[in-house]
Length: 80
View 1 (cartoon, one colour):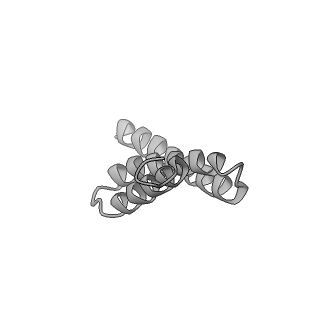
View 2 (cartoon, rainbow, N blue to C red; view 1 turned 90 degrees about the vertical axis):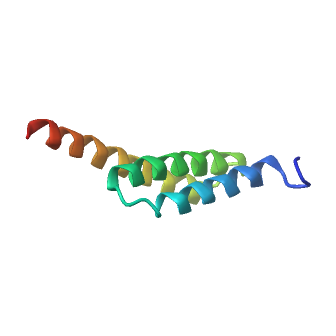
């Protein structure tokens, strides 16, 4: 515990902050990278909550979608 807040809650707060910061990005690639970090933190948070499947599944999907678009966008840039 830190400041009378559990470590699990801290992970949730940090994940939320990272997610909010990601939406402030103007560059789509930067948004997706920071959003992916938030999604990973939310997956960890879901695991720390004794396996909260809705949180884990939703954020794993967001992470996979971000990786997909980052990969294919980079591939498209390399082809041009």
